[in-house]
Each structure stands twice: as C-alpha cells, then as structure tokens.
Image 1 (cartoon, rainbow, N blue to C red):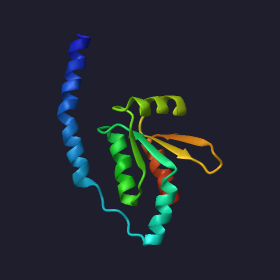
Image 2: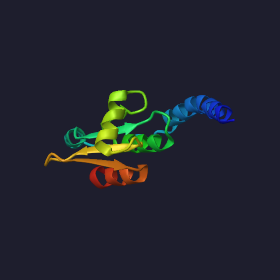
Image 3: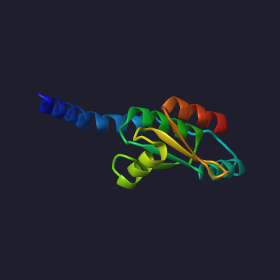
Image 4: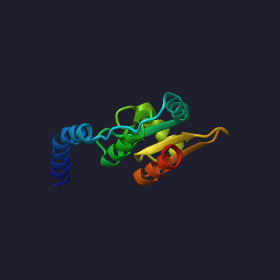
Length: 128
C-alpha cells in the first residue's frame, strides 16, 4: 500500500511541477526601479546572500518572486539536485529544509534563515 501511495504522489508531482514553473514565469512581478548607483549598492550587498531552494517548492517560488520584485541578484542554490549544496545546507543550517537564506555577515558569522515569510520580511527590511 505504501508503494502505491508513494507512486501516486510522484505522479502528482510530475504533473504539477511544469504547471508550477510556468505559473511562476507568468506571474513574476517586474522589479523595482533603481538608479545604477543604487542597484550597484544592492548588488554588492547581495554578494553575501545565497538562497537554498528546490525548483518546484511553492514556498521557494514565493521567495523567488519577492527577490524578482525587489530586483535582487541573489545566488540560487538547488539543494535538491546538487549534493554539495544539500550537504552545505545540512552542515551549516542544521537541517535540509527549504527555502533557506544564508547570510554572511561582515563580522564573518553565518546566519541561516528558514521560512519563506521570515526571509521575505528580512529582504524587505534590508532592500525595500
């Protein structure tokens, strides 16, 4: 019975994954307008950020849309398909859970921020 349930949900994911990705492309908002100098400052600040994510995770899509809306150039790291990123997420953040924003602070410490709402709130506080 477990095998049947597992294959059922894999089938559902296979069907929904392309729909979710197309929906993301069609509904991603335009980014905010900044001067070249302001955008350069934002880009420099984004060098210390990395988003660990799965491509079809709805919460990751929510964060990616907010990143696009704010016009941020944050490195996206796929923790589902790349074993090195998955291992880094496990060792650094303590668990393989996405989305997770890795923040490298100026004093050298790393902060691992989980939960899409918390990540979006942090991005708004620093870049909105």
